[in-house]
Image (tube, rainbow, N blue to C red; front, side, top):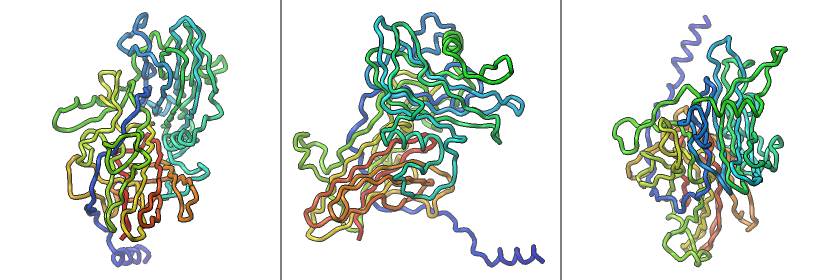
Length: 456
């Protein structure tokens, strides 16, 4: 009787709604501002590492067994290190731990001081598993995250340096030191796959070369795994080729047809996008105090792309992707997705009307398009594919004029409109400053938009 009863109940239950594309009429404007010129060591290819070797090296080619694996680039002053890689067992019998090493080398004749300003590195298991979370959650305590990229970027957004990282590393002339020497274990996992995300903001007193490397754990005489030594890492750097297996080869810029963005392995230019979002972008910067962003008419909205990229500009033609000054020939042509890049957006909202208005600011995952349309397209209901997991910080004044800071964790599916991050009451002729900050996390899929809406 139970199967018959279940069938009868299913027959009486409403069918799951068919997703439909809905268009929300609103203007999409290019995002003001630009990326800075801070270089980022961007190590994301191969994403899945199963063969040890060089992930990304900016060391000189001279004296290396595989000179093509070294991009000959020196960092000096402020720069970032980003690395996002996955270990996956080749077979159920081969459960060796893969180690990720990040080496810093001083090629000069004087000591170099390396300051670790902020830094964090987390595993998928057990540090930050991909658990199901609500679409919006208060994250004032920093305990809400799903995935290592999500956790890493919110740590850096809060200005943290993980306890395992040193504050300062001194590099003697001509010598190398390990910035990172950490495992990506798979042995106890089912399936045997694990990932690690790393982001560090650094400052060096002189030129340095950087390399990210992959090596399987060494074993002791007792058969136990151990971490590779500095000398073993140096030997791998000198003798190894690039790690594998290699990712899909990207589509050259401008080539029609299917677009393969590819994974990034290179030196990107830019780690922060700073924008003062105002009505006119051509006013004298000295008059910044007079800047204002006039709110839309009641019931209307306008939006700005976030992490827009080739074939995903929402009709603005604006590509925010950080360019690569060095790259391997089989990897991405630009840092698509801007993983690890901070967005710092300031919106001086202004109500020009004679009536009180309520303005909401939204983070949204509209359907990607490169065409200029009548509005943004969303799905109702959204798909079941997660396109964004991350924390957004909003600074604003509440209805009493008291400064507030709010950390909100977002999980957004493809085509999701999203609820307001903040609601701002504005009296006639009043201006209120809203600041939105986030670091674009790995494991997210661009682009998104920031939307300003005046409630009807």
